[in-house]
Length: 64
Image (cartoon, rainbow, N blue to C red; front, side, top):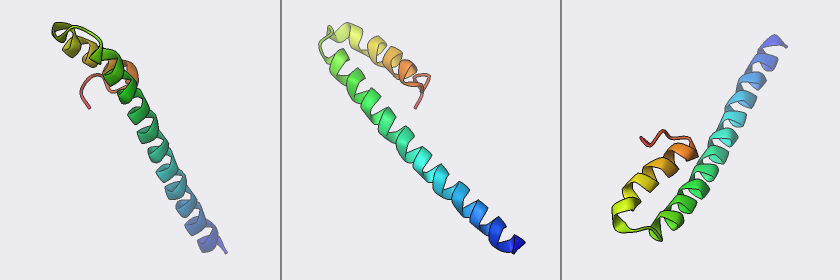
């Protein structure tokens, strides 16, 4: 019985982790699209800084 509980627990953790990753990806995609749309209306010289700031705001520290 303990083996069934343990294996079910691990499966549940992996399943929940997969959903969490999928949701994080959905949120990042939404945030990146907002940054892209916002920076597109700026002058070309200001776009790179705006994109980096937007990525940081999305939670990537401008590196991802």
